[in-house]
Image 1: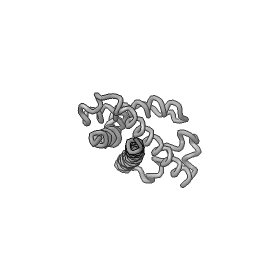
Image 2: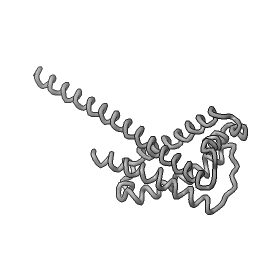
Image 3: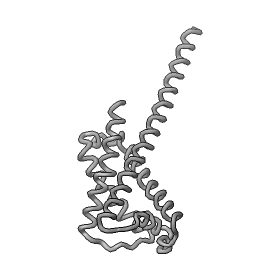
Length: 173
């Protein structure tokens, strides 16, 4: 009788360790995925800015800061650049966390990681342009060509990496 209680107790401890390990593993992959997606997206925005003839890539992140701080962000120097980087990564991590939360609950997402990534990139574009930007102090003018480029960037730099890494993570389970 004593032995079976001990065995049951060990199984419970083993299950708790497994759950703890899975949470740590999920936390690590979400951190890594958000960092990758945010960095890829920020890099793509910087390259696009420079290709268009921009001289100061810091303006990209000042633009993001201006969503909260208004036009004064452009005169704010490094603190505004830093806050723009922080806001940028908050959005990237939010998109990553949301995807990792819904992925196991929606089996259709595992059917094709590439189509899922494309769809999630479009979703990310909709969320950022139709919700986040509309709630901010930004009032951008819509240009179809810029919208298509932005959507393609979000597909390639946010949607696909998040989908591929989530698929890899959940496939190992």
